[in-house]
Every structure is written in C-alpha cells, then in structure tokens.
Length: 154
Image (cartoon, rainbow, N blue to C red; front, side, top):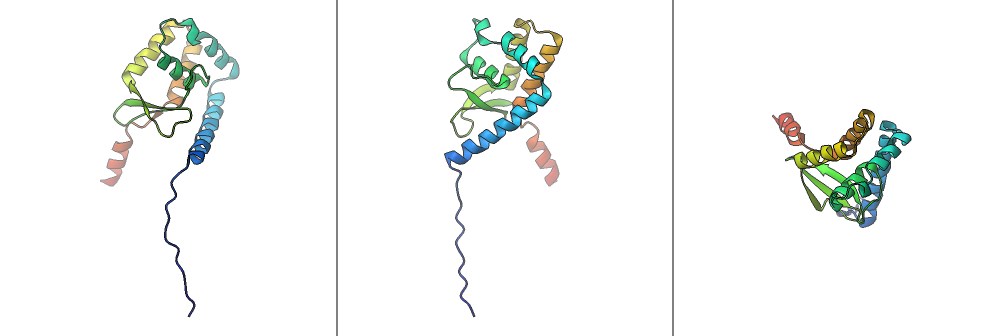
C-alpha cells in the first residue's frame, strides 16, 4: 500500500493586491453598466451641472459622494465604493482602503441631501431622471437581505 500525504487546509486571507484587483473589476463592471444606462453626452451634462465648484455650501463629503456617483475624481481621497447596510445606514470605502470604513449616515438623510442638490442644480427632467438612476445603480443596497435569508430558512 502506498503512503498518502494529506496537506493541511491553509486558509489564505486576501491580500491588498487581491482587494485592489476585485475593486478594479467591480469599478469596470459599474462603468459598463452606467454607460449602458446613461449616454456619454448625458453624463457630461450632469458633470457640468453638478460640478461641486458651482455650490459654495457643498461639504467635502458630499462632493466625494457626488464624484463617486458620477465617476469623477473631485476629492482626495476619492470614494470608490458605497453601500446601504441592512439597517438603512450608508457606508463608504475610500480609494486604497480595504473595507467600508467611512460612516456616511442614514440613507434617508443622504436621499434628502441628494434631492436638494438636484433641485439647486436646476436639472431638466431627463437630467434629473439620469441622476436619480445613477444614484440607485451606484449605491449597493443591502436592505431586505436578512428578510430574504430568514424567510428561506423557515
């Protein structure tokens, strides 16, 4: 009989390189989805009308959020990922960070600020629709995930 050696299971933790690669792939996927959702001319019109320099009262955090939604680097550090937690709060990840380490606030507050910004920018109906669509597409929403898992287990 032959001797069989079994290698012990070694869990490999993701490295920073792994995280950067995955974030890069996700960013490419989102850009492709956004370009299929909003055309380049429409996106450029939003860049011009929503440029943070037009709004003297805009916070740096809101400028970073806006840059993330419109895929522009208007702040340093730049936000490269955003998500809504299952309990309705918004988290963000800065460029180069691993994980979502930035607490943005309640989704309801962000939505209210977003609507006020769109009002102040005096967007056309089509531009506003595109901006709202980008907001929904870019910010990953995890609300309701626990409910689906719980109902499946029952």
